[in-house]
Image (cartoon, rainbow, N blue to C red; front, side, top):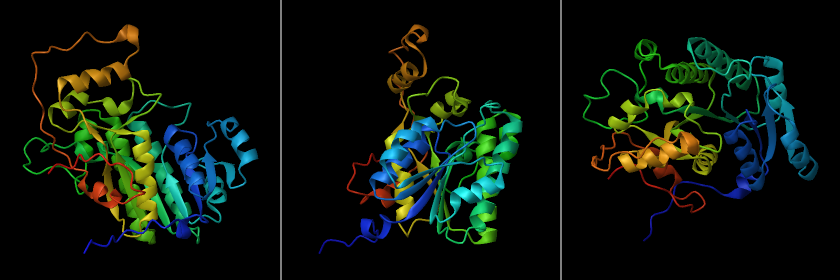
Length: 314
């Protein structure tokens, strides 16, 4: 007898729900809005004050299930307005346009935004679930990452002092913001799951992306992972719709483990005129993968029957 799946992705249960996507102005947020609309949801697209509303004007006129809100994560009332009547929230932080550099101050900004958003969720009676977008950088950075014999997984956290010592500001921001969100979620009884994504492969990816601080060390340690935008969108929707989802989920579908793969990524990160010279073909080392996404792959195995790339290791 074939095993029965415990995961329920019936559209009958989800098509008529109303959810909020915040911030909906980034690549991840806007892609989530379109996919959720396609799945039958009514979507509140919450765009930060620095976000462009024009991109949604045409879509709004043609799709009555889309409502656009201007919501600043530092304006509590604008958050509650966007959340009103929603059963779920997909939250990802986008740095303010007037302060887009990741540094120690940005960590405080991102923490404050996470606190405001989770507090607003606690005050919104209709919210059943929050999907909080975090990062692999909130998992991998600590002193013993080279000495532990087991693969890094969801229970691992980046060390705050280590991040400060080596000025890993992206990792510091994501770690502190996610810890703040989890503390508030547990204190206020909010049903929350987090997606800890690898480096997002999106059209605007460049060498200046703050995730890339420490890329050489990630590569050598077998921890340099990337995720396609569409895969990340599917993962977010999967953990929202599956009632069995819980805790954190490492989200990636590719591991940069050899020179050839590193050079392919370099061609994406740098414009053609700035591309680095070909890497030495003599270096044929393959760095052993030391991070697992088994938990997410197990959850997504029946998600719309989509092709999953197994980077969980046998």
